[in-house]
Length: 389
Ligand SMILES: *Cc1c(COP(=O)(O)O)cnc(C)c1O
Image (tube, rainbow, N blue to C red; front, side, top):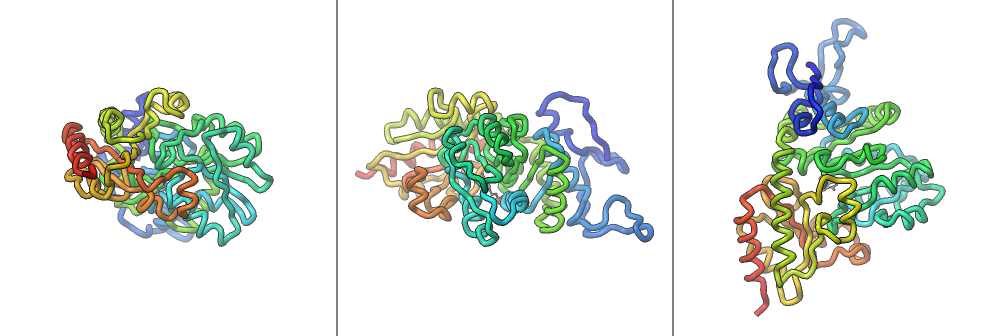
C-alpha cells in the first residue's frame, strides 16, 4: 500500500489521503481484509500484523486517512462514536474530573454520568462558550475538557482556541467532539486541541448505514496510549465497516457543500416563517457564537434546531412530515428530524435539560442533500397542519 501526497487541498485528501492504492494488485480501492488473524513465518516472525483487534490493513487505511484529514499524529477507528469516547476517557484515572460543554450529546453525558462514575471519574458541566466561566470551573482534580462545538442541540459555539489556551495553562487534556463539523469544516487540532473524536456514523459515513467512531491524537505519546487502550479494551471497527467509511469519506466534500447550501436555505425559510419562535444555527449573522464560529470553522455547518410558537402542536408537526424522516441520528444524505428532549437527549435528567435550554418544544433538523424545494415544501405543509385551530 502506498501513500501519495501530490496535493494541497482537503477535497483531494478526502479521496487520496491515508493509504490508497493496493501495492500488490494496483486496486484503486483498499481491499477489505476480512481476516481475524495472520500467518506467522516462524516464532516471533510476523509480517506486521498478528491479530485484527490489534491491527488490520483496511482499518489502518481509514486510521491513516482520518489522521491526515485532521492533521494529527495518528488516528484510531472504533465500533461507534461512544466506543471512541470510552477509549479516550480511559486515559483518565480514578479521582480525575473532566469538564464537559453544557449541551453535549446525550450519550456522552450518560457515559460519564452512569458508567465512568462507577470508576471514580467525575464530570462537571461547564459553560465552555464563556472562557472566563470555564476557567473558574477548573479545580485541582480537573484533568481534561471535552468540548462540542457547535454543541448539540442548541448549536452553542465554544472558542476552541481560547479554551485550549486556558486548559493548557492548567495542564488539561483538550478533547473536541468534531462530529457536527468534520475536518472539512473545522480542524480542532490546528486550534489547539490534543484529541479529536468523531461519531463517524454521521457526516463522515454520510449514508446512515454504518455505526462507527474515530479518534485522532496530536502527539506520539498520546498515540501510544490510545493504541494500547484500543487493543486492550477492544472496541475496534470491523474491516468491512472501515471500508464503508473510507468510501463515505471520499464524497464528504461534495456532500457537505450541498448540505450546507440546503441548510442555509432552510434557516432562511424558518427564520422568516410566522410559526417559528427561535432558530439555532451558528451561521446566522449577528447570532451568539457567529463570530467565533466564523473564525474557527468554514461555515455554520448543517445542523439546525428550532422551536415553533405556542399555537402549533409539535406532535402533529412530526406526524405530518412526509419526506423528512423522524429518527435519531444525523448527517446522512436524507433529511432527518428529531425531538431532542424525548430522543437524543432523553438520557439527560429533566432538570439539567431545562437548565441548559433543551425545551420540550425544541426540534432538531439534519438537512439532507435532497432538492431543497422538496424539503421546504414538506416543512411548510407540516407546519400548516400543526396549527391549532
Ligand atoms: C451520535 C453522536 C455521538 C455518539 O456516536 P455513536 O456513533 O452513536 O456512538 C457522539 N457525539 C455526537 C456529537 C453525536 O452526534
